[in-house]
Length: 457
Image (cartoon, rainbow, N blue to C red):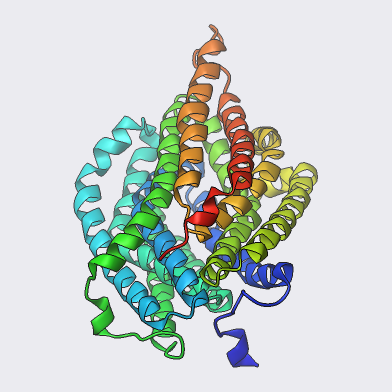
C-alpha cells in the first residue's frame, strides 16, 4: 500500500475527476507548505523585528520571483515532456528528459549568480525601494541569490516527479522542508538575532534539503526510467525541446513578475502603511491562489499524459471537470476571505490601521479568484498538451497592455492636492481587471482547440 501511494500514477485510466482530485489534494497541501516559507518568514520578522523589516521581505519577493523565471521555464518544459513521454511509455526519451533537465538547471544557476549579484543594488534603486526597507531587502535578496540553485532544483525535480503522476512524494519532501524552515526561522531570528538575513538563510537551507530528497527519489525510480551520467550529458534534441516548451512559460512568469515590479514602483510611491498593507495582501493572496495553481498544475500533468497516449476526448472531459472543481474551491475561499478577512490580516500584524487597510483592499481583489480558477485550469490543459505559447500571449496582453497602463492611468487621473500620487486602490483594481480579462481570453482560445495539435513528437 505504501509503495502504491508513493508510486507514479497513470492518469490515462479511471474517472477523470477522480484522477485529477487525488493528484491535486497533495499539491494543495504542498502549496500550503510552500506558502509557509514566506508566511512564517513574514510573521517571525513582523513579531521579532518590526513592520518595516516585514515590508522589506515582502518588497524583495517580486524581484526574487523574477530571478526564478529561468527555473520555472525549465520546470514547465521538463514537466510537460515527462508527462507526455510517461503517458506514451517511452522510457528512453523520458530518461534523457530527466537527465538533461538536471544539467540545464545547473547551467541556469551559474548564469543567475553571475548576472544577478552585481546588478542587485541598481535594480532596487530603479524600483524606488524605501530607505527604511533597502538594507534588509538587499540582505534577503543577496543570500537568496547565493543559494538560488536549491530553489531551482526543487522546482524542477518536483515538477518531473509530478509529471509522472506522483504528487505525494513532492508533498512529503516539501513538508519536511517547511518544518525545517520554521524551526530555523525561530533559531536564527528569535534566538540568534540574525534579523532578515536569518530568514533568508533558513529558506535556502530548507530548499536545499527538499532538492536533495527529490534527487534521491528520482535515483530510485528505475522501474520508469534510467538515471545515470549518460543521460546527464547535454543532448541538443532534448535541451532544445525543454527550452522551446519552457521559454514561453518562463516568459509568462517573467512578464508577470516584471509587471509586478513596475507596479511595485508605483506602490512604493504611496506611504509606508500602504506598502506594508500591500505585503499583507500578498501573503493572504498566496494562500487564496493555492487551489487555482494546484488544479492548474494537476491539469497540466493530466493533459500531458493523456495527450501522450492520444486520448483527446478524455483530455476535454478532464478539462471541464477539473476547472469546475477549481472554480468551486475558489468560491469557498472567497467566502472565507469576505467573512474572516480581518482575522487573516491580523496574523501578520498587531497594528489595527494596517489590518483595516489590508482588509479593505482585499475586498477589491476577492471576486477575481473565481476568474483565476478558469484561467489556471484551462491554461494547464493547453500547457500539458504542448501549447505553452497561447498562455504566454494572454499573460502579455493582460499584464503589459492592461494591468500596468490601467494602474498608472487610474493613479494619474485621480491625483489631487490631497492625493499627489492618486488613489492607492489603482493597484488592486488593475489586478482585478487583468484577472477577469485573462479568464475570458483563456476560455476563448481553449474553445478554439488549436492546442490539440501541439503534442511533442
